Amino acid sequence: MLTLDRARTALIVVDVLPFTIRLDTAPRPGRSVFDAVVRLVDACRDMSVDVVLVEPDGGRRAVQLTDTAPPAIVVGPQDRTWPAEIGPRPGDVVVRKPRWGAFHGTGLDASLRQRGVETVLITGIATDMGVEATARQAYDAGYHVVVVEDATAAFTPDAHEAALRHTLPVIARVRSAGQVLAALNGNGVAAEITTKGQNR
Image (tube, rainbow, N blue to C red):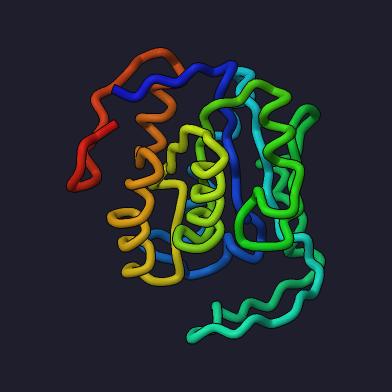
């Protein structure tokens, strides 16, 4: 059963901006992620659940040496404006992150603790990048983490599947938007087993 305390839960939306919404992501296009996020954001605001909108800070940083470069995406100023359907709205937390994860180099942890948040619901693009990095950081900071599977997508099916099947279930609970909304509404639902290990 997935149960959520609205007063101690926050929805984190990672990089669901024009430049990611238009991407041909997998296993669903960015537009589908956007639609699921809008549904979640609207429901959370209606239920007074905190909403956190996370965006890149847009600054240039030194290129670090890696075996594979991340996908190159052309991003203009207009691509960094939040869609009107998402926000921000008064009371939202807006985070500008210098790295993939929403916690490193930001005041997000302090903001969540001031609000009494213990559980974070994470959505966004890309599953194996900003979403996974944020989930790892939240887990390390002691939060209960729920990744909303159908409100995420990656650049390849394999990347999405690897994150959802192998990495994220060890640090989070992986659920659908429907399961999360049911839990927020107080209608606990039987959670799907999404890992080989125990469902928590």
